[in-house]
Amino acid sequence: MKPPYHVTTKILQLISSISEKIGEINAAYLYKPPTELRKKNRIKTIQSSLEIEGNSLSLDQVTAILDNKKVIAAKKDILEVKNAIKAYENIDNYNPTSLTSFCKAHGILMNGLIENAGKIRTKSVGILKGSIVTHIAPPGDLVKSHVKKLFDYLKNDKDLVVIKSCVFHYEIEFIHPFMDGNGRMGRLWQTVILRQYSPVFEFLPIESLIKKRQSEYYRILGESDNKGDSTGFIEFMLQIINESLEDLLTNQNVNLTSQDRIDIFKEKIGNSKFKRQDYMRHFKDISTATASRDLKLAVDSGILDKSGDKRTTSYKFKK
Image 1 (cartoon, rainbow, N blue to C red):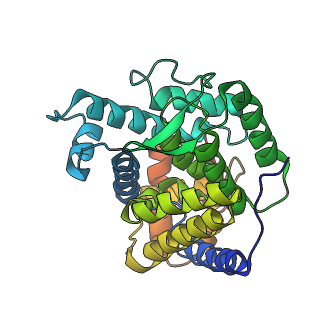
Image 2: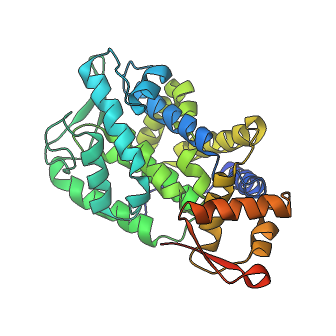
Image 3: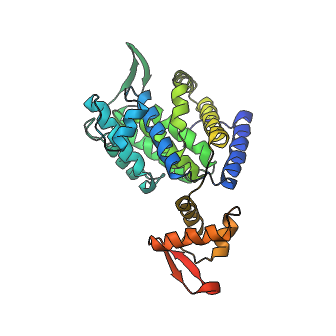
């Protein structure tokens, strides 16, 4: 069964705006940001997602852990950060439509924090806010079938990937498939799904905007629960995605290094042979000398294989 939601005028407007921004990002080579920016955004993503769940570590402390420096803080908070770093570092290895992959990611994210990390729950749970029960999740004996249906929808439904990512995020919060860690898994897996739409989403810190609007995030989750329909949550998350893309376009002054250009071109060309002219056609603002330096650096670093000589020279990325 398809999860309940409907496509509104606001959703269509946001999808159009997101598509336009993705086009601008592609034209500016921002779909794979420079290395330093990727690291900065990954740290913001991890710190924000964990802060939503009550983790006390700051951006500086998360940065220190990522750099293998000692941090004085609660052991649980440090372990949450280390697990999240590992979970996000493995993002290339996750299959967005695989329940097995989803559970594996949860096992990494919650390792040492709960029993049965990576295992679908079989017990019933409710969510408390203070002493008030705000959400009663589906009974434990129904959870696995609900999750399987959700992954079937993700794999087979013809709706746009960006919409399905929002629906999936909401449904994971509603189903609550694990005893703990469902919020951070919903946010992580939305990123995993969105990478199918554009590689820019791997390093786009959507979670930092959710953190800024945390009370609204939870309010809209609750309203969607009451209505039995995720339309409002889809609108909210599309707005967050749109604002994240706008922030990237507005505030990031990107100066690509040789390595950045090589990484970007590798994603475009794959295993096909190419010449210097092909490389320059992709990066129209660089000189012949810069292109030659980039390619020589990649050859000397063992990234590229070079064949031929002078006018017949061609290149191919090593596997």
